[in-house]
Length: 261
Image 1 (cartoon, rainbow, N blue to C red):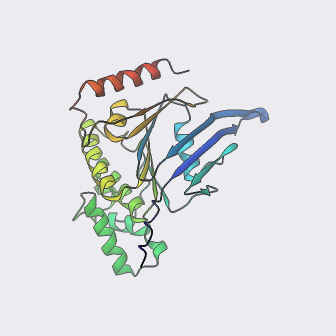
Image 2: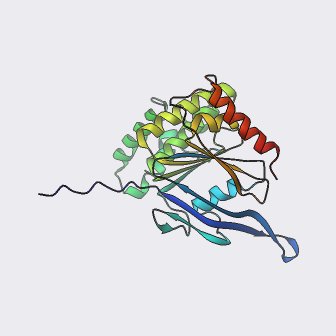
Image 3: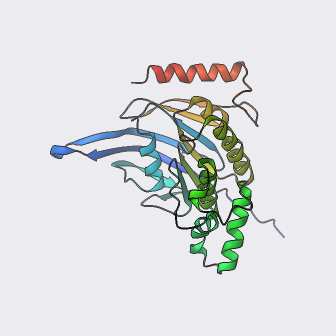
């Protein structure tokens, strides 16, 4: 009997000639994103970096289905993005947790779409919290958690919905340096386990170099991709473990950002 074909990896994102304009006063249009194209292969980890206001968050929100495109097209696994999709998860810098729900209940909220019994939903929520290092913290409320813990809950909640694509918009920007490093290690461990396609927006060059396989550098707004670097340094990586290639890539990105226009 012939062997069954291998399953096709899911989570491929294609951004094709996407431009985004917003209305402004007087009926005028403001260009937020110049025509831009990129492809995220299934299971890849890609970073977007650029100056403030360049449109990197706007592009991420368009992939999430929160912002309509003015021209061009965005596909996830060949299907055009026309609005939010539970298979495309988003983690923002602000944790967006429900303060009146416990950590387990916040994660369990994402599981409601699966029609699980309450006991099963809680069991799975606690398992996801344990995966992000919050075992035994499920009954705490957001107000009882540190910033890093809140972001772990937000990540667990997003992963609970089993997304094909994970979009992260400067998720660690509000954390102190030590907590940020621990979150990098946690995120990479979770990514290695799930191999979800990740698009990560950041303004931190070192963060992009530590986390990603590919970095797209954007120009000043209206932004467009002006340079792409493939990061081939072996994993795991640490921000305090630099070599000549790391420094070369860092200097290359910094020069491009310095002259972004």
